[in-house]
Length: 278
Image 1: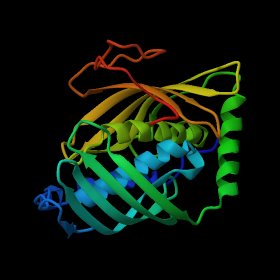
Image 2 (image 1 turned 180 degrees about the vertical axis):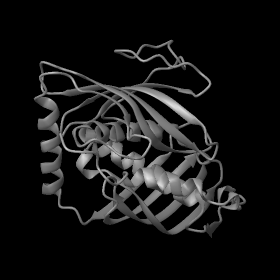
Image 3 (image 1 turned 30 degrees about the vertical axis):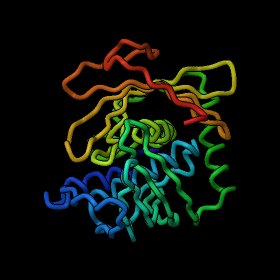
Image 4 (image 1 turned 60 degrees about the horizontal axis):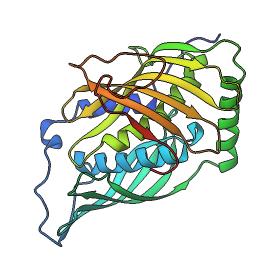
């Protein structure tokens, strides 16, 4: 087995940088007048958080570890208040490879936060420097590593406290990021966003069909509350197919039981399931 990778994941570094922002950067701007459009500071937490939500949506929809993207820099952000509906954001931003931090292109996105409790409505279109064939090859290599395990992979604390990930566990971590993107998109609001801070535990289930299946406990860092949210996630994946995710979450002051499955009534008491249509 090779040694630990020297550089922490790009998203892990982004989280550390965010925690160093001054308090003023965390304050929400005043609401826009009904029907009016106004420019937002591209470096504001609100602009960055909304762009990140759009990428959570994209990452979970694509269900591709090789295509995972993180937020680079917001170039432009506009907020429009729509009477009786909610707030709509228009965004232009660059993206980075989630693992290496290298530039991967740029995106245009709109995000509508509805006044009701409905999920945000996201439309996003990206141009990429990474070739689609390269993405598919990476996904296939990752899939083959996981599919041909004779013993289930079990891992803990990915990355470790120094931001390092064992090379053998990188496929496990990448798949956890894909699944966590779905959770973070569902949980994010106009005022609250999430980073995946760590995979606390991971356990593979050996299946007789072609699908890859894992149980995860992932820690999500909530912004701006700084609270750590623990989520148990059952993930099923096959390249080229929609991702299937079941999960439940609890804050750090609630007990979360790890287990081999997800049942309603445990931990937070609500079971969430996602698949092709979300």
